[in-house]
Image (tube, rainbow, N blue to C red; front, side, top):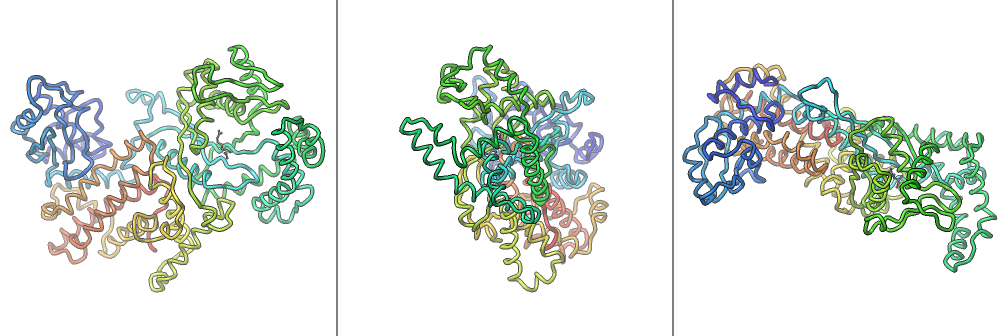
Length: 638
Ligand code: ARG
């Protein structure tokens, strides 16, 4: 079924006639589109409508009870007739071997796939494709009719923690969502460049260096570098706090802060950072050591999440020349204003209500976060020639990114600004307090792994059968965190809930893993192999014909058919919950099937057993594909 010829042969056996061709339809990637392809010309003919309009009008209903496909008849804008009447007329004239006779429901005409066609099409369809079911490598082609023109390129920038600072929930969410978005683009045939833009520059590095001079220990740095840097920074920062407060108080009273900042840690910090900005080799060497060691640790921790970045960039990597180029252009466009020694953009003046005024270069001549980000965009454009760049960053930086993008427009680069997208997300409440004193990504992963391991140990019998309990606890523990994080719409805040997250009940990561384990055990317990299933589906008989008279089986097949449409939707809205909600629907449907559709001891003998085993194996493939897309690692036993 992976070629049009193969698919057509199957369809011929079902008496369906030649597969109609339509531009917006991809029968080789979405099984629903096979049905759509037949539906379009029939409806077009019965109503005298345009094929394109019919194609756009056909929808996938939200509930299975409302059909596999549905036509809201008013969308066809038929003249001179009430939609409900047209519905009845279309239904009366409709007849096709892949569809049951439609029964109008008000102004909607629902279509149900026949129990005969569905298993014969969908089971080979899924098994032939395996891990590509749900992907669409042609979607990323520059021009689908000339593949030699290559694929489109997207930069996904995510995670982006700050060196020597806590890896907080915002970084965790960015990591989870960013990995998902990267996987999704990859699965749709795009070239994906993953960038980690570290917070690795600024005066805080001056302070860290001062702290290192006092409290640094080579031994501890070698043992636990991230933790040690965090501690050193925290310690010096506490000492620095009174000075900082004094300066702040002075500024609020309108006093000059220069006096305060010319002494103590202030002076030491600024002096070190100035050396860094001036390119002093010794200062830079220390900074580079911290940066390199941190990256080394990050690489291995991200690997636990199956994430690898193509580039560890960072604020420090932005070139002075590109910063100057940005400023020169801003001046030429007349949007850069000087005030009290600092340079700024008044966004309000340039048609951006609500964006206020932003300092772009500070009073002491230092670059800002904003300036570095804008310059980085120009550098990346030159380096990668991307078609799209996505920033996965918390909604706390909504205004900030609007300013960044607006600045690119003010440079006269509307074309470039149009390729930039900020994908945001809400807050996680109470993570650090509920997880105890965690400050690093590895702490977060260790904690949930540990809690998961504990849950597993409670069932001694099962625990004894698990081969690599450490690895399983890790995969299930990570699934727990990730599923909790991806359950709602991105923009929603949620409260971190350890108990719920590691539970096997409810829509949790462990439940999803358990579902996979259960499906995975079916072939083993039945003593069947993948090869048995493949030879079973190669013919056109279906040993599910008896089972498909049952709603459990039919509904499962119908859900399985939708997966590629679900990934297509997720590709549009970049919501991991779109995939997750679907996987839970699949999982719930499966659990209602196990009792009714038993494999071992099936009443209809070996043939029925093979039919059902094929059904479950196809479901397992889909569950695995969905889990991997989300960045989870399905386990085989636990
Ligand atoms: N390091 C920043 C933070 O922790 C996030 C960086 C986001 N990306 C960017 N290009 N500004 O808040």
